Length: 146
Image (cartoon, rainbow, N blue to C red; front, side, top):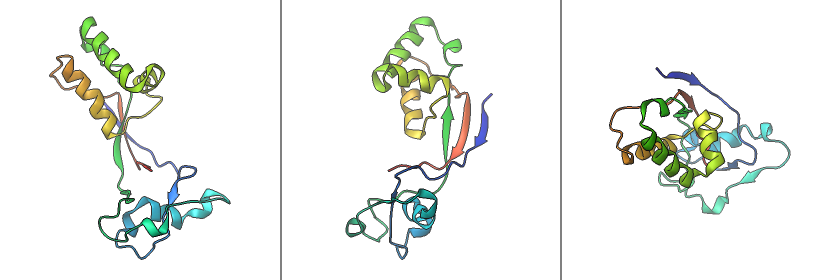
């Protein structure tokens, strides 16, 4: 059975900030919310070019501040697969992530955002796995996309 945890890490270093406090999406945009706490970022700031922000609902730089569900580790998958299925599954993911990054994700040292969880689940399907597999743990956290 999987566990759910909450993670509230701070603003990443060099996270791009938005100066437009009057934007209609400012209260839910990570770039503006991070700017409001810019004193936590040190003496140098990374800014999104203010002339490229639309300050409209369709801003291309908008990053939702809603927490998302990350997955941590999938060490239990191998136990539920035939050896040839697991070999194919592992090969596909090593081609996608790289060898070291595959093992970092498998062990849980690197968490998987929703798009990477889909990559792993699609690899299961390509290996003929049609039953539901849970990751080792789930974490709700802000997805600090750039």
